[in-house]
Amino acid sequence: MLTGSSSRNNTTNLSLIGPKIEGLRQTFAAGHTKNIAWRITQLKQIKKLVVEQQEAILLGLQKDLGRCDMESWTAELGGVISEVEHTVKHLKKWMKPRKVSTPVVTQPASSYVLPEPLGTVLIIGAWNYPILLALGPLIAAVSAGNCALIKPSELSPNTSALIAQQIPKYLDQQAVAVVEGAVDETSELLKHQFDHIIYTGGELVGKVVMRAAAEFLTPITLELGGKSPCIVDSNTNLEVTAARIVWSKFMNAGQTCVAPDYVLVEKCFAPQLIEAIKVKIEAFYSANISESNDYGRIVNGRHFSRLVTYLEGQNIVYGGDNDADSSYIQPTIVLDPAVDSPLMEQEIFGPILPIITLENIQQAVPFVTKRAKPLSLYLYTKDKNFEQVVLKQTSAGMVCINDGFMFAANPNLPFGGVGASGMGAYHGKTGFDNFSHLKTIMKRSFWFDIPLRYPPFTSSKFTLLKKLL
Image 1: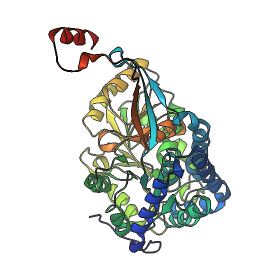
Image 2: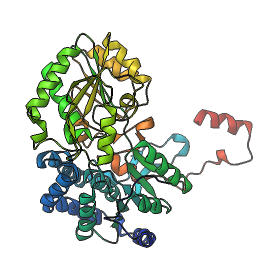
Image 3: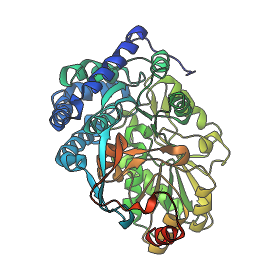
Image 4: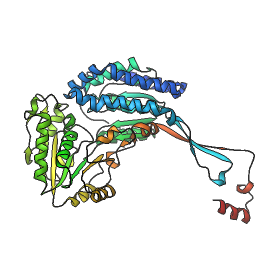
């Protein structure tokens, strides 16, 4: 059972959900989503939706998250457009049979892998990047030839409504559907069988989705989060490091699953780093950050209260100002919070940056490895030896050296977690493969049939068989 509050502003009648899913299944069974022309048309229509509805999308994101247009375009719209362009460019190649070698024991034969669509995909989006995290998986699902049902997040109601209104205008209504709502609607969706489910969000709901999928043995992709560490070596470019930490941490007011969740730094270097971060915060957002048009807001009152509670009793060395009426929390630096405090045990998902000081930077590795595997890990260093130590001794879904989450801008890199931070991945060809079944095919000839494998079995047959295998 899903738990949580439910907004009834944008909802789909529960009785319509089953027929929607059945309609998608019938469309897939008819086979026209397998056609490359259909896939490319739908992909181009996704791009067209984003381009033509740009103003409405940006306005919706501003209303839901207080984001400025440039940040929204960079983080969401631009990502959708580039993903479509990359996919259209390479789709024909991805769809081709993939030849593999054939061992001598199976000759004469040819072997290959053929990607085929799975069927109907359920996409459960997230509120923090509501366009990107609905349309990004849709691009992957459609490119693989699937039908799809999108469930946008109710916590970003303006963009949820926009998705529900515009998807039917631009995409094949028989193959792509939208269900709006909250707990009740999502619970109803999970009672039905899909051929793949992708969920982006928190670990708690991720477990609910996984349990529901298990009832039907449905494969799933979970894009979760966790506490992504940021290791800063004193052997770094301080000014650039500070700028990139501030950019990646405080974009979208810290409400990013791959944002650095805490910083690990040597005690002797910490004052310099903190000062550099302070300087960059005010350079980016001005000294009066609450008046900055470039700084976002917390999505709702519940998340605002949660974040403010995290600050209670902490050593705040910068920031801390907040205003409940406008959902504003100033970029905040907390120095050396207790490792068993909620601030260090829960994913922050907000504009609070804990800085943990260490006697030496080598201690960062055991600090990270003692905790759950994060979605991302960031390392700032000029020391190639230390770089290799971190890469070899830690595990994370994704790693970026000397920057924030720039890996997300490369469609050739998989985007996904490991362990508690998720399973499965998408983006580019990885997304196409994720929503495909890679069907194994071997074709053999009739003309040369060695009786070696057939009874009666003899010692000579056995001897020869062992040599061949």
